[in-house]
Image 1: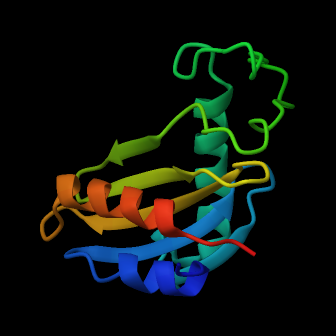
Image 2: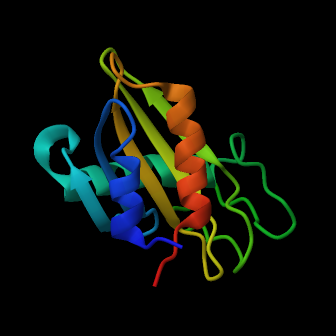
Length: 144
């Protein structure tokens, strides 16, 4: 089972991969990064994509509440998913004129507040393949 560095290097083998990182969507901190980052700064990318991830997870529309995860839309203090549970959102895809931005939430035994982010060139990348591989990488990722 690969750790963060190995998972990021594996992700960068995808055709069109420009950069990748693992971040915590609660704190916005990058736990690891490789390749380029939009705007040139991996820490800023981690913080901004974490905000995007947090909005999706806290959304009552995009991630409907279940009895185990109460909706707290607008409070800014949504609790993380219960330990060992699946994140309420699997992945997010944002497309721009020249790139795809993929976020894949990682299920962990503790709090599931981690996600993988991939910046993929739209000309050279394959969105379907990237989504499948990112999901496989997230399933094998070992944090710790």
